[in-house]
Image 1 (cartoon, rainbow, N blue to C red):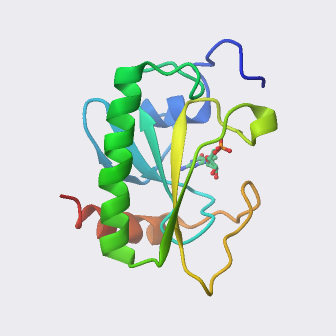
Image 2: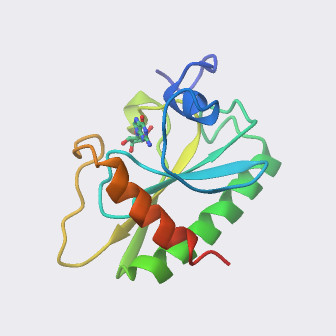
Amino acid sequence: MSLHGAYDPNNIFAKILRDEIPSVRVWEDDHVLAFMDVFPQSEGHVLIIAKQSKARNLLEVEPEVLARMTAALQRTAKAVEKALRPEGLAVMQFNGDAGGQTVFHLHFHIVPRWADREMKGHGHAPMADAATLRALADRIAAELD
Ligand code: 5GP
């Protein structure tokens, strides 16, 4: 899918927001949701999405929604750092097929990094089991300010 086009209300994150498919939620408020990536590129890979916006990518998002998302991104990244003590944090965001995007509902990735652990490739990581993700999500949520 290109950078331009219509929002698909049946994309996988829209279904997660409507609880039509399961997800492991870290935290949420009326505007944003932080949840575990089911194909984590490293332990503790979290995704941040907005609940109401129909933006598919960074170019389309309303500035006030982006502000809420980046505040949520920082809040979650701080909790990830406290919970898992990574040595680094990669924050990623992809736009359009050619930009590496695979789900067309705007999202940010938080990927904890350790110098001696390789990060799995984007779109090439195995599926994690729900219990493992739930335990990680609980540890992260416990460190939210
Ligand atoms: P993108 O490639 O669009 O930047 O990122 C989409 C992300 O969504 C990928 O990291 C992928 O692992 C993740 N993902 C794909 N399907 C699901 C799903 O059903 N549940 C969850 N929690 N994450 C998913």
